Image 1 (tube, rainbow, N blue to C red):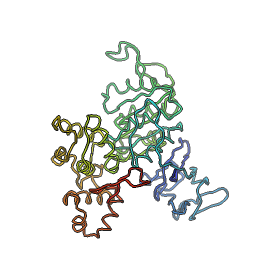
Image 2: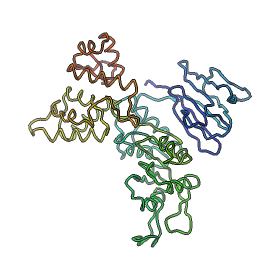
Image 3: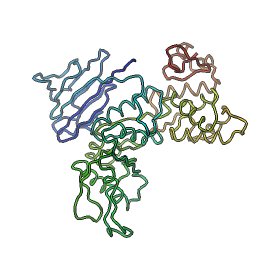
Image 4: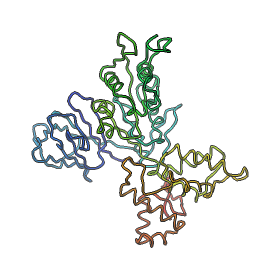
Length: 436
């Protein structure tokens, strides 16, 4: 069984809970909110340390001029190639970089819990990150677009954790009326407001010895954010109308479809609460970056209604942006199944013509990203899919339109894992799609 190595940065800031991030590319650490990893350490400059992963397995550490040197034991280091596994001291912050292996297989799903289905590399990494995070007692922040299965993943984290025998309580903060949000989260006493005919425990108390999942936590009001921060610091709960405080032990997993860092920069979310909630950040990749998962899920959804999907229809689905992700894909499959005759069991490409009519789902150069921009990698994939659709899958014509050699086009298709008109299963491929 092959394994992959991921470098994890473990950070312990002064008077803060430890947190862990994955080191995939070079990253700046410092006190500035513009740094890749902002640190709550007042002794540090805005940009205090650059860490770059190297192919040799080591890391390159670089301290800019004017910033204090890193302490590694009794050594003072400014610029060096360094092996992982050492503790680094940066101001009053302790940093440890370790290598963690990730198997190519998926982690085992506990019985009785819905799986977060994936066959892609990105999805597998997400599951393993969630699995490893579940073993800790840290708060976890799930960052992903709408419809990526954040609640399913949160329930898996609960099932993998030491709190699995306790309750799992989901609460959608965006659906709570402002007047009732505090009561839903912290509870209320009898007679505390009109309609409070009896005492009621809030979600935090209901999740005692278990896990509370706060979806769209960024929608909480500033007043409730203060009370939530107090709970995370000492487990204190004061129900609405109560004269005394109670205590509970609940692990908090939160999620948003917009980055919490943006809300912090806009002054809509407390920075100290963000650091408490995002001790571990699990990023969920959007469905459009996982074409293998589009095929897997589309086939599953169609099978649930007694249908199959033609290869041409699958390619159409894989070339759609899916701003609503899995939720939107399921709706599209159900709609297509409802439009075919009872005698037709296979969904063909024409059953999904509505995807081109709906500008909200058709693939375009406008991304669903908050910035409205695509990365260069995503833009390349968009142009490949558009050109293949224009040429009806003819790769010779596509190569001429794009102005590249046929072999270069093949390399691009493989890099983006875009299946060609013909696919084959070869020994040792475990059913993966290959461009013919």
